Amino acid sequence: MKNIYIAAYHQSKFGKLMDMTVPQILRNAVEGTCRQIGVPASALDVGSVGAACNFTLNEQGLLSGLMAMTPGLEGKPIESVENACASGGQAILSVINKLLLGWGDTGIAVGYEKMRDNEGKMDGKLIGKVLGYYSHPDERAGKVFIFPHLFAEVMQAYMQEHGVSEADLAQIAVIEYGNAKYNSCAQMSKVQITLEQALKIEGINRYVVDGLPLKTYDSSQITDGYAGLILATEEGVGRLGVRKSDCVKICGWGQATDPLKKEGRDVLRPEGAQRAMRMAYEQAGVSPKDVNVAEVHDCFTVMGAIGTEVIGKAQVGKGARYWVEGKANVGGECAINTSGGLIAKGHPIGATGVAMVGWCAQQLLGKAPQELQVKDPKYAATFNIGGPICASVCTVLERAS
Image 1: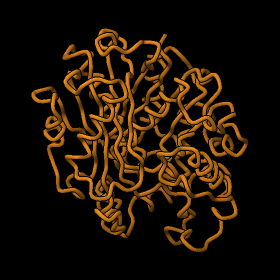
Image 2: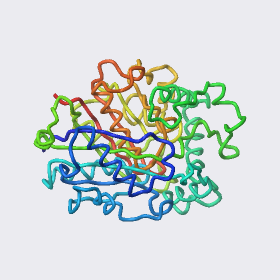
Image 3: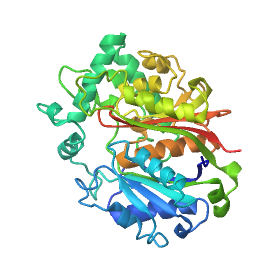
């Protein structure tokens, strides 16, 4: 099987794209990524674009056709993919599969989401309703904000089964806000919180659902943003004029999908997520102990804990403790979500999976901000999910040699 490399990465600042239109977003993503290595879009053979709310919030379909409006991409094999919050990861797999099929040697994976209006404002009730479409119809009744409610139930179950406190999970958010301070692309880079603030119910911090432990600071952001990755075979890297030593190799990947309905399965031990991560490790020929950089899908703090378990850095039920003990810090055993994670970096749904892989690539290349750069990065792992821990896309990365 051909090796697949990351030749370039680019993202917008996450937060508000204001009056930038969807056609402009996709063109900016493609051309911005191409500029990182000084190539025209015509140098790309294939493409894929991931988004989740393009129909419901942007009234726009056929994103592949918009991407093909970028000069040089006309007539290329491009597709749009949707896999809820794993849409970005799915776009990456789409490009990888095209390259492995021999449809070309270079390609671009783009993810984006525009969740706010042209003034940067959000309609919380509308967004809550739209995101609720990615849950099972039987689990929506009586829930105003469906996904926070579902994950508040997951958080409660995790705390009760494993003896974890609200403070243990809140510590994840505190660490991530601390990381985001040094990431200029992070939505919350100018906001810092203490553990006391993360726990105290006042101001914007409140319990999202009465009787359940999830709070505002346990939650990811409503975010606009885009991200792009140029992927290439070894032949493609040469054609792009990029040195292989300046690339990152995607040495393993996996994908799996659990039933959409949360009820009736053990979401604290998500079988599909574990299978996808296992596939990625097996393909890469490494184990969790080899990984010292990771980005996990912390849509809520409880998923920061469960994600730490999925990537194999903590036993089931010990994920939150891994953070509390400092093992997930920049200088810890495995630096997790040094970008700020979805909680502080932001969560532009379609861009999230692309940005997770892109940030890990920057870490492996030694290009992360100095305060966040991991010393001697070896292997990186990513875990991108969609829905109520339903769709999982995982990767393992290493610097090319």
